[in-house]
Length: 334
Image 1 (cartoon, rainbow, N blue to C red):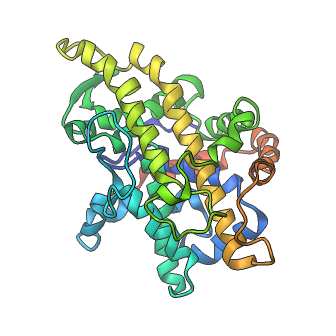
Image 2 (tube, rainbow, N blue to C red):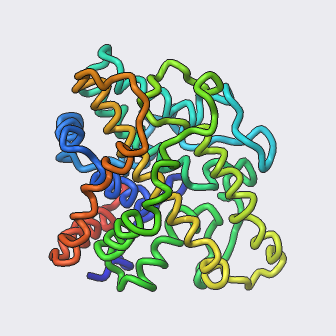
């Protein structure tokens, strides 16, 4: 099913295809209890994380949520440096903590928690896009480049154009086939690394928000720092070498050199969204003696292991996923 013509992309977000993919991957890694919890919180999306992941960019076209614009990114204090503790509350790091706390708290209504979940899954996607943690040139939005013959911004290249090219070039424009490929990569290539993705390099005492239980595998400072360093080491150097060449096309050699890093960020965002939701459900909903303990490596692997069964199902599946995504991408912004 061809999708290229219908793609509608979003500036200053992770891109619709990026957010859809992270939400879809997260959905496959939820526990059965977490699936029910998500259905309860997201009735307007039928419990679909892939669709809900787009919401925080959709609302940016009105004025009601103007205050949330700054929550989509974080700027390191100096280029190519770590995101320090207490770096900000009004940024993507603070946003992730805030909406995790809202989901954990009994003080908020279902409607408020629905909003919190939609913000949370979106911001986790954003923080894994390197240019959302790079203060240079407004995250690359001010840098004009050429990608496959099209004049665009470096930010847009990383938001969605890398993924669109990958889907068109290697997966016959099928998001369904691409999703199956990424899920297979999780179950094979990245399986040994999964436990490390749930660990924080910073001790709890050094995190911005120390009130969140240690059972919740959340450390956005780590994720933002990795993105900031990736921006410095992967995103910018090739551009800097060719920025005086107006005809240099990022859709060729540059694409080949960076697509793996872009995909890794999407994979990590997807599984971390799922792990956090799974842990919140165990902490708040189930609370049967398991609450409060830290997540073990075995649990991390078991949380996503059920996703492997989806690979075979998707291979034999009709193009339902492609049809769904085409509808999303064909929607007109208001």
